[in-house]
Length: 342
Image (cartoon, rainbow, N blue to C red; front, side, top):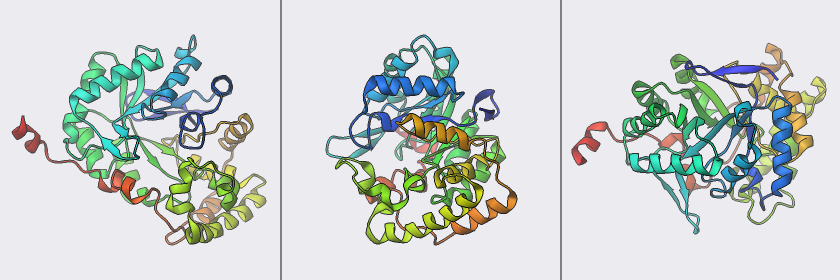
């Protein structure tokens, strides 16, 4: 596994990471703890040392799981976690970025992860009530205290990224980027590259769609997140099946699986890009690792770009209630308004 630099502050990670969310939540019942610990150990031994979790996964249980897996080998990994998204039992979403919460969330994550520092700490969702400068100022204090090493943002707009970066260098921005989520290429990717910020795509396999196609929706548990996502619903899914069919054709020519082809497309976007595909199966992890070494020609990249261009996909990434917390709505009030309240 190659290693890439994220940002310009010195963080070096494996060129492909491991998203740990599905081990504990969102895609059916939590998986057996020891099996997931063994999977994490296998990933690390295979060179995948960039691990991604969040306090909201579970909630809380995924951080505990990852902390157990890293007992005695903490120094071998680059550990990323997040704060800021709070899900209610009724499905409601609350976002917080105020300084008191930033600090309390970090200290709680450190305890659950059983570590004294977090390599990369993301604001998971942007708080529309708190100026981004205030939130980043609180995260900067955590760096000064040695509790975190680098600052990241997730689901942040280009303007939010710029404002945050002016307070303290942002090391990485995490956003959904795949063959069916490409809107970020217009403004956010160029902004990150202009500022020297690393890019961490989550769900690069389209939440399993590029591995199994429309059949991925079959036999899902009642509490599987994908049952609620518009991209996986009815006529949207029927339309999106056409993209998978074209991907299958290209992957057969390349001699790899559709999922590997889709993941390779993300991996080939540049050395400043580190996708974090998630899995709960060793065989899938091995296939993902193989995809990291697939080199695509300019012609192959162009073909993939063409089949996934504007109009190729139907349906939003999230239900309407969640879309208001994505990068398209992430701008925060000016710092002057916060100062007036204080």
